Structure formats: structure tokens, C-alpha cells
Image (cartoon, rainbow, N blue to C red; front, side, top):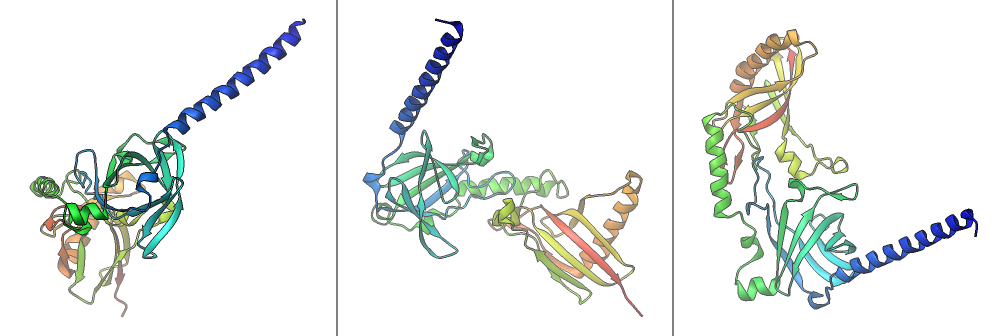
Length: 312
């Protein structure tokens, strides 16, 4: 037998063995696929969505809010409540590997199922890889309607509320930020963002909507990074600036970051922006600070401030 023929036979055997190995791997994966026959038709309400700390909040002020309602129809389809359409919708339940599934454009690891409850881990998948950071650090608990009503004798709405531990954690963050009100590192997003109310017809305020679902900016992004447009008429001159600021628990605005093209302009620009804050914003606006669970604290905001000189 020639060497060339031997190489060809070895290549064919290698391919066949590889195909057989892949088939065996697929079989092993399939063997781990869960069956939902025992819980089919049971309606479950999401009652807890927590980080691995057991809290609903992280140090950025981001809140995990339970809101889903799900119901398994079969081993490859699931119904989920759509707040936008205010009804249950059916989604394909895609099995991936291990205990990882996808439905409603979200990835989950199903960790436990019973007729009373379901425990899942929400996963952030990037280029077919599960992110190993805070984005996948989300544990979700569902209770069935019967378990909530007949055993716990309560409602899903009551179970979904933040806990005492959440309140103590937010108070701890707020105490730290209030001791150093201008410190950006200690400021965190207010679940209820800063509110500006004009005290004069010289000034107008618009809170800009920064939700952009195509680029991954959800409603949560809107309160994590609130943005405001403020227009001032009868200003001393025409101007327009964009910058960040920290609004503390007493409603005082502290200048944050801003961009300049020439480092030599930093100090003059800083003085200009601080003058705009102190002369116009602090005097022409009633400022309600950001707060979380009713606790006011320092929070960072983005601002676009434009002034228009009075024309005679």
C-alpha cells in the first residue's frame, strides 16, 4: 500500500472518529436537557431578582426589579407576560447546553424546578460566551400562583418589594456619600433621579430620554445616567456647554467632568462652568436631589446648558 493511500485512509478515519465524538457530545448534552412536563401549565410570578449578595441593589444604585410572569407550554415553548402588550406571549424555548436556555431574547441557566418554585440565573452572553462579571450575577426566583396564595397567603406584589436588608444597604451608601457630597466615587444613581423645577421664566428644563434599546440602553440606563437640557434666556452672553455634575442630598450642584480641546483651557473653563452653576442654576431652579427608597443622596447627572443673550 502506498504512503499516499495510507495518508488518505488515516484522514478518513480521523474525520469519522471526529464526527462520532461530536455525536456523542450532542447526546451527552441532550441527556442533560430538562423536562418541563411536571410543571406544564403552572403560572409562575417572579418574586425575587437578586445579586449573589442577596441584595436587589449594587453599589452603582442599579436595582434588580422582579416583574416576569411565565408559564411553560411544552419542552420547547414558554409563555411570558409582555408589559407593553399587557398579555402573555408565546416564545420558543431554545435549549443550548447544560442547563442553559434562551427565550424572549434572554439567556438563563435553570437551576431548580418544582411545582412551587423555579430558580434561574440570568446570563449575559457575548459572542456565544457567558460573561463572568456582574451582568451574569443575577439570581431569579419564581413562585407559583398556588404557592403564593394558598401557602404563603400573600401577593406577588408584596413579595417583590425591596427588603429591610436593601434599605440598610442604601442607607449605608447614602451615609458615605453625604459625608463627602461632591465625591463622584461615592455618588450613586438615584432610583428617583434629580428633579429641576424652574423658579423663573428665564430658565427651561427638559429631562432627556436616553433609552435606546437597539444599543442596549434600557429604562434602567435612563435612571443610572440621567441627562438634562437646560436653556437660559437673558444670559450675559451666548454659550453652550455639556458636562457632568454631582447633586448632593441638599440639592447643591458640584461640577464634575467636562471636555476641553486644550489642557491650558481647563482652569478658565472650570471657572466659567462653576459660575454658570452658582449664578444661574442654583438661583433659578428648585432642586430635588436623587433618592432611593426615600433616602436622598449624592448622584451624578449629565447636563447640557445653553445660554442666549437678550436681544435689544
